[in-house]
Structures are given as structure tokens and as C-alpha cells.
Image (cartoon, rainbow, N blue to C red; front, side, top):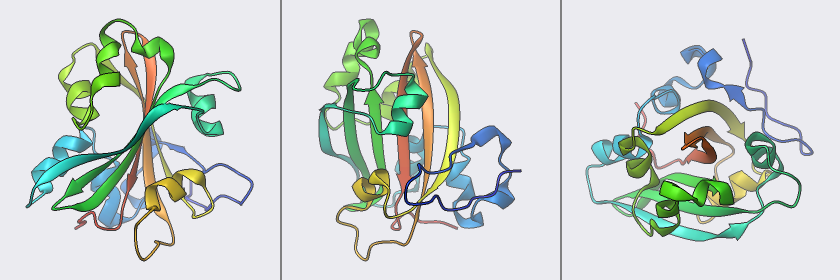
Length: 189
């Protein structure tokens, strides 16, 4: 069974297949969140005792991180629509989400993904019977990794590590990638 060992400075996080994990391999307090099979957005909304909202930090064309590019099967130099948001409860950031939508996924029904504004992506994906969750992986992010840095921007004090999950979705046979990073404000049991 995989062990969660922090990555070295030069390497990507060690992403582990979700299906191979057992609850004992992730922190007990976070395991329900990391291993949940439903919509994370729905779960955040249900758990939020205050006002829920999506805060869009950024949405623009950009280059995927190396691990994202490899998982999506994109060539070096390829671009994707990058959407970075926070799922907030009572104005506190609970989850940072970074979605990569390659140009091919923005065709047909996928065009609506470029016009979400502050609507949650999860609500769109889980409401569409044609969308399929393909691959889910979990990792421990360290402060030197760009995904950690994006997620922790503005989080004080800076956490020593962050847990993340990434999901490859298929929409009309086209891939998109959703990274979800669990922030310290997230209530855990």
C-alpha cells in the first residue's frame, strides 16, 4: 500500500490512486473529505453553517503544471483554460480548486464551462449524466510546490502541508482536471 512521503524539492507531489487507498493512509480527520465519492461542492454547502459562495481568483488561458500536463496527455507548451476558485463558508476559505480545461473540452456542451463565473463547477459536472469521473488521486503538498503556493496564498499562518485530491473527468469523451486542495479552515471531525 502506498505511503505518503513528502516529495523532494525537485519532484512533483506523489499522487496516489484514490481507489487503492485505505482510510488508514490519510489523516483520520480528513479521510471523509478526501475519499468522498460525491460532489465536494455539495458537501461543503451542506457542512457550511453560514453563507456559501465561490470566489473566483483567476480564470484565464495558461500552461498546466508538469504533472497536470502529463495526466491530461497534453504536449509541452500546450495551454488550457485555468480556473482557480475558493469554496468559502462564512467568508472563510475551506477549499481551493484549480481546474484545467483543455481547448477540446470547450467544444459542444463543454462551452458552458468557460462561462461559469461564480457558479460552482461541481454543480455542473455532477448534474450532467454524460460526465464521468475517471481517475482520482490524493497527495500531500509541500510548501515549495506551485499548487501549494497558489492554494495557500493569503492563508495565515501558512500551513506546513496541505492535502489535495485531483480528479480527471470525462465530458463527452473529453478530459478536464479538477484539483481540490483542503485548507486549514475546513472543519474536520
